[in-house]
Image 1: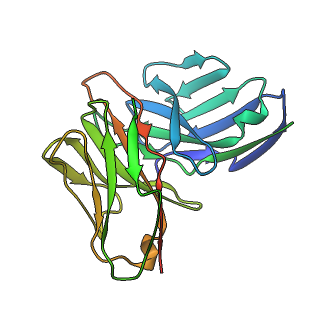
Image 2: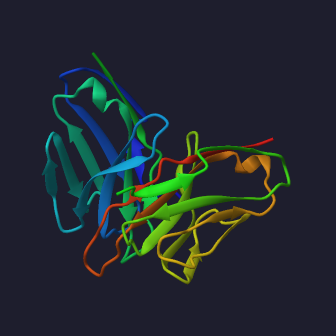
Length: 111
Length: 115
């Protein structure tokens, strides 16, 4: 069963704009992770945020986590055409249990 | 360093045939798993393993078998292929740890069509 639910399902922006994707989940978690999938490829791990963290940065990526609202957001700043991909959130619900993935947000960055 | 290698990349099967999807990793990861990805469904967990000799079922295990005789390999067997098993299959691996969390490394996928 899906734990994470991404919103929006699809997003189209111009190059240089910021892209924000949201993820909501249902049960308590140990950590939440974001992955990128380019068309026809495997998923690539982007960033992991622990349940006791509120914000993390990695390059142009900023992830926030609000455990009281059971939600997370992924912000990509100054987007590029190469950022066009699907983005998935995934949650680890307790120690060493498998990640549960959402259905993803499809991001299109138009040059 | 090859990471996670999946073979084959593409496969067409007839209903009722069996086959094995191969997955190998060279990172000494304890944890390995298989997911299937269908349009609009995200990734769903089929089976996973936390170490050699240990396997467990995920969300959608029916019609699939796995074994983990070595740390490196985690093959997925389709016992009698059905059209409902048409999907893209991904293998993933990771370190495990208590209190330490790791991201997954994914293979490039196997696109399976059952006719």
